[in-house]
Amino acid sequence: MIAHAVVFTKRNVVEFRKVECPEPGSNDAIIRVTHSWISNGTEGSFLRGERIKGETAYRAGDPDPFPIVAGYQKIGVVESVGSQIKDLTPGETVFCIAGRVSNMFRPHGEHVSPSVTPRQFIWKLPPNAEPLAYAGLVLTQVGYNCGSRAPINPDDWAVVIGDGQVGQWSAQTLAARRCRVIVVGHRKSRLELAQRLTGCHVINSKEVDWAPAVHSLTNGTLALGVDTVGSLRITETLISLLRHCGHIVSAGFCGTNDQISLQAFRDLELSLDAVTGMTRPRMDATIAMISNGELKTLPLITQHFPVAKAAEAWRLIESHDPTVLGVILDW
Image 1: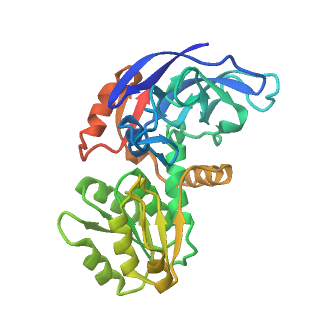
Image 2: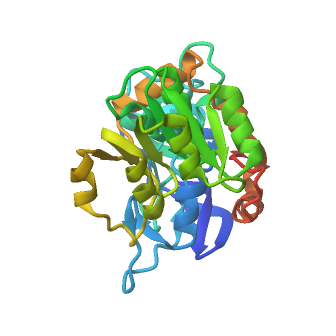
């Protein structure tokens, strides 16, 4: 089957082109994509050749991970279903992942349409939902995972490092748990957005030394530090700020620079959650929080691009323009 896709053909090269996909089987649905949501961090590291799959960093001697169909999240309309599928109807709008592709470094990708997708990787949307709100569901779920993992209580202090999409949704999840949240970042517009959506405290690390500022607010009672940017230096600083039996959540991709002292955790009896990926229960919980308004996704969308101009979208993302947050490819 022939489809169109956003393909990373080599380091820092993006093309929109035809690709081959396997013929659908009895447990597959064909989804005509309407919107796909770019994951700036994860997809960017694939585009730069920094990882070869999931959380596996590229190391010297590994094969280049190209060509690759980019992405891992999209919404679209069901066109047809295999004979084993009884609970999907053509015409339904759904969220899906794991579109199957041929002749690529990885056998699946999301910026591809039509998408041949196994039933287990398709989610029905709530009745009367705004579909676009769910187009970044995997990434939103990462933020939910960051904010929900640690066993903390209402009114506990939590600091989120990073004002990107995962940082925003981590803060929203913690705010829904009624924690006192601090977001540390360096882009004024993003910090203002976090404050508007959650009522959190914000610290601009370009203007002040963030660690003493966090200590001043929390007075040694910080229960949770969430690193969404993938920095060992930041994680080590968070450890020094935490109370006894505090918690670290690490969500950023550290690549090969991933060594940290276990004794530093033992000294204060800290716990560490290293979050990644997705599970169906977490996806379902994320859908519920979007539906009830606790997780806000639409305000994070800052740009739309026609999918044929995906290379332009990536030039903008890689320019590190501070106004760029959620980028949607319109099909």
